[in-house]
Amino acid sequence: MSSSTNHDVYFIPEPSKWPVVGTIALTTAVIGAVTSIHAGSINLILPVGLLMIAYLFFGWFGAVIKESMADNYNEQVDKSFRIGMLWFIFSEVMFFAAFFGALFYARTIAVEWLGGASNNAMTHELLWPAFEAVWPIMTNP
Image (cartoon, rainbow, N blue to C red; front, side, top):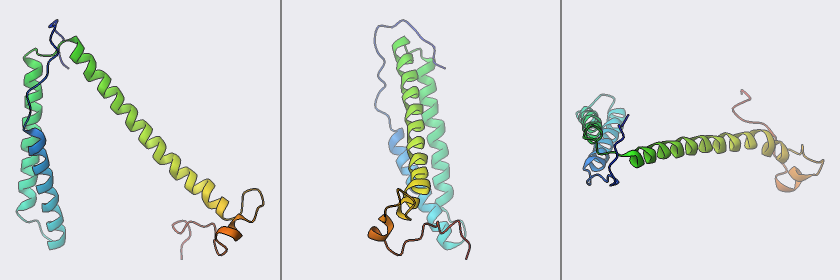
């Protein structure tokens, strides 16, 4: 956790090389994984990509730890880190709520409605006459 100081200046770090290193490392690792899957054996590209990812983690986390240990963060920076993490967690909760809500809607409401289980209207005959309200994964051949 970062320690708070009473500096009046909001700390803005210098531009970093780590996002570019991360892009190159992830691209190399993905290309190595894809070529390894297609070739059937691990080639040289995958370990190089994984080593680059390890270098990325140690370097980037080391830079953040150095900034924190140098006492560059004041209370305002610490508060902005906490609010940023709060918004990140909130966005993840909302994403999964929307994802599982759409899945619930598709499986329990939309399919049965197309199958004619709504208000006894002939919706399924008008929209899709040969439709059967069955999920293919749920019925075995």
